[in-house]
Image (cartoon, rainbow, N blue to C red; front, side, top):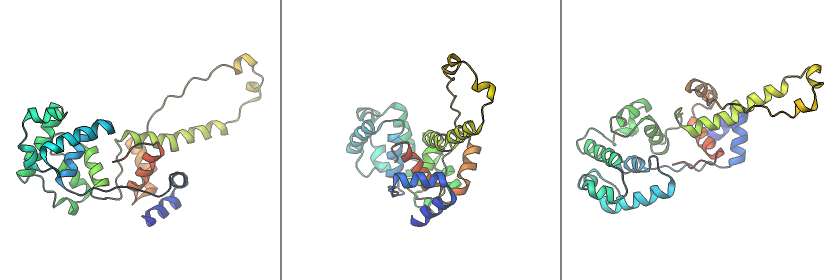
Length: 231
């Protein structure tokens, strides 16, 4: 981790300031197993407290750690009683069925390159690229992942890189003498609010280029800079 922080601080002054403000990196890693991915599905689109309550109810029925067999034995009614939606129950059953059938092999995942892990995991209903990337970052401990579809990362990049850049450009632009002689009433007019345009994947890749090969660590700091809860 020290090597990653040293690299990020040297390569990017903006990231250096964020790291110095946040302090030590405290990324928590899970184990690359069925339980971790099933838990990620349960937590999708839920706030922290609700997700914890539902997960505890579900785990009490299926058994902990979660296993394909434990999930497949549950009826739809039992899964609903835990607070799981019909759609999420279907996702969990699909994950369990594919794992039990050998279509999903957790033993192989640590050996696969990132793009193959994403391809392997997204064959399961309900697991998209974002969930697969979170698995790469916080379970397989891959150091160079950049989730370009993550709202928090996009917002943090806008806040720390694009918004600051626009502000500096505005300050650098000198006003003419004619503008300086405008009436007091004109000066008091409120300027229209700037529309926030979040960075595109291409812009994000450009900003994050200097973070390589530690983009995962940089992303953790960006989440923290927005007080966003990470996995």
